[in-house]
Image 1 (cartoon, rainbow, N blue to C red):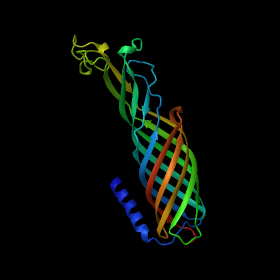
Image 2: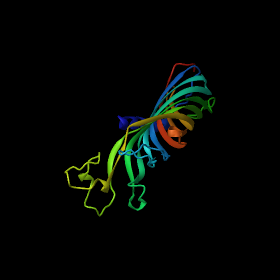
Image 3: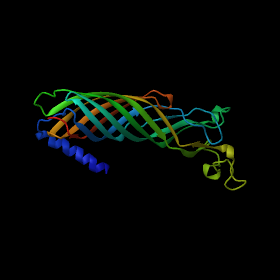
Image 4: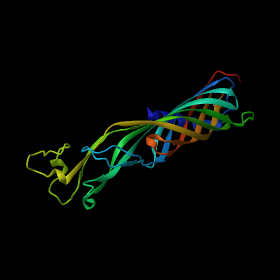
Length: 254
């Protein structure tokens, strides 16, 4: 499905070379779909380990992941639109922390463990269109919006070997600290970490710039650069995305 949408968006841009003049219609509706990439970085607090520790851990984002978006807008005039945007950004984050007895720092081991994370943005905003009265194929625009974002963090369980020279390994100790085979392995030689599924909702502010390529009065290819600022888990975060897609215009006055 994702490959098909990418193909449609790419084909739209190729067709745009021979595009016809078009534009936003007053009192018309515009519906859009797009795909692209998003980049963002953060470190956020996480939950404690399986044995009830209270240490604060964190997670980092990878450099970039793909995203998917939908939009709907109503044209108050050819120059001004109100819009609703939904963006879904599935990615991964790393649980980052230190395992082991905090009273013996020399025996502690730093770790990073990857887990699935999904960001869902729901924003409402205003879009300003430019060159609407000119007979040109490319119509630039900018938009601003506010809304909410939901961050869903997948739980995971993993084990850390605290001493690589010890004969006890994670395979010999159960997550609850008991021995897989009684009398074999020392529970203190490993540290099991557990993170539960979690979700948080915060505010989101967005700003975007882009352009439409009209090759039918009711259809355009779109490229957009969008910035998000969000605060899930009480951490200020920034995300940047670039997308290509297609918009469809319904109704309105020519």
